[in-house]
Length: 104
Figure: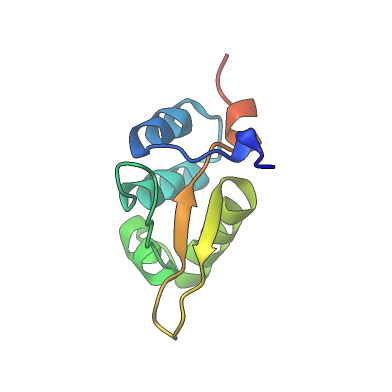
């Protein structure tokens, strides 16, 4: 049985949720950048570590840490990159952490 709290989110719903959430500044920026690479339905997110580092103007290790944190919180890995240099594919989901951290 699917967990409704992990239901897919559209890109617009993801942006609205992230904007309302109380997150550390760097994590919020990373969530918005990652979401910008999604299709309108929140699927097919291809944002690897190097791309995130360039977009956020941060180090590779910082981008790696932020992406790991997002995976723990709110995005699902759909498919691992099959070769070196290929990013994992993610999907935007409605996770409890962002819902719980919304400004009331």
